[in-house]
Image (cartoon, rainbow, N blue to C red; front, side, top):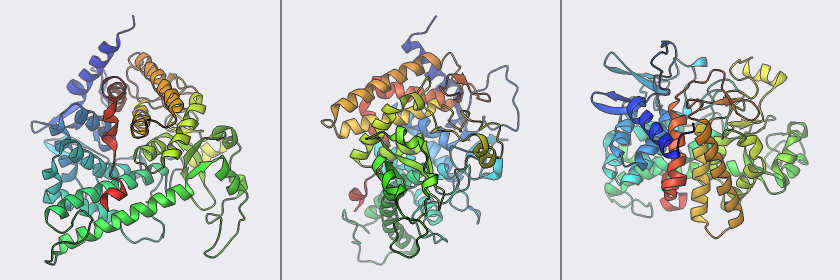
Length: 492
C-alpha cells in the first residue's frame, strides 16, 4: 500500500535527524554519505560513512530552512579547522572527513580513486558560509579572524599566477561531483560556475570585515586614512581582485560556453588555423567536433552552457548541475535562463524521464567510453556519472525555476506555468519511487527507472534532496532565494 505524502516526509526527516547526523564532542558535525543498514557488513575501504562537504551542502541548506543554524555554523567551523596548510595544497578544504579514535581525520584526495582533490568542496565552503551569514544575520561569524584567514588562504590558492591567461580554474578529471574519469578535465562547467559563486561570496565576507574595520565605505573606496597592516592590505587587494576575476569569468563563460542554435551556426562557419590577436575561432574548433544531435536538442529557442571548452576539443554535453547553478547564480541572464528552461521542457524525456534528473547527456559510448574513461565499469553508458539519473540534483532545478519566477513574475507566464507543471510531475515521481527504491544514490538506464548497479541505498543527499524539493514546492517557495550569491553591482 502506498504511503501518504506526509508519512514519506516524516520518514525522510527521521532518517536525516536520527540516523545520518554524526556527533563529535557533543555537537552535530555533519551527515554521513549513506546510512548503513543494520545487517550490512561495513567495508573499511569504502567511504560512505564519511562526512563529505559537497554532500552536506543540501543538508546544511535544509537545516537553515528549518532554523537549525547552529548545526550549520559548527559544520562550517569544523571544515575550516581542516583547511590544508601543507605547501602543495594550502587553502583547500577536504573532500570528506571522519572521526577516528576521537580525532577528525580528513581526506584531501589521498583516499580517492586517482588521488584527486575535490575542487568543488573548497568552492562550496565560501558559498555556504556566505549563505549562512546572509540567512542568519550572524555577521560575527564572518568577522572572526580565523574565518578571514581561511578566506585569505582560499583566495591565495585561487587568485594566483599560472601558465594560463584566462579566468578559469583548471582541474584534473574527477575533481568534483563527477569523481571518476569521464573526460571532464580542464575547465569543466560546474567548477567554473562554483568559482564564480565562491569569488563573490568570499568578496562579500571580506567586505564585511573591511567595513567593520573602517577600510571600505559602501562604495568600496578606502576610507581609513591610517595605512592598513599587511593582513588588511591583502584583504583589500583580494577583494578588488575577486570582483575583477568574477567579472572576467562571467564574460568568458557567456562568450565560450553559452550556445543556442544561432551561435552554433556562427561557430560552424568560423575559419580555423588562425593566429594572432584578432581571430574569430580562438579555440580552433573544427566543424566536425560539433555534434549533429545539437540541432534537435536545441530547437529554435533553447540554450545552455556546454560542459567544457578546450583547444580543438569542446565538450557539448549538457551537465545539469552546472547549468542549474549558472541560472541560480545569475551567470546567465534572464533571457538565457528562459532559453535554458525551454531546453529542459523540450528535452524532458531525456533529462527527467522516470527519475529526475540525468546528470549529463548524452553518455560517452563505444570507443569514447573506452578511451576517455579507461574502461571504467562504473561509468558504463547510461550508468552512474555517464548519463545516470541522480535525484539529488532535482532541487537545484526547483531553486532555479522558483527564484527566476520570483524575480520576473510578469515575464513569460506561459513558460513558468509549463515549468511549474514539470516540477510538480517530477516531484510526484520522487514521491512514488524513492521510498520504494530505498532512497538509492543514483539510477541507471535510458529512462532512469533501474536502481544503479552499485548504488548505495539510504543515500543522504537523495533523502535531503527530496526534503528540499518538498519544502520548496509545498511549504515555502520564497526560500528558493537562499542560494543567491551577491551580485557584482552590490559589491561595488
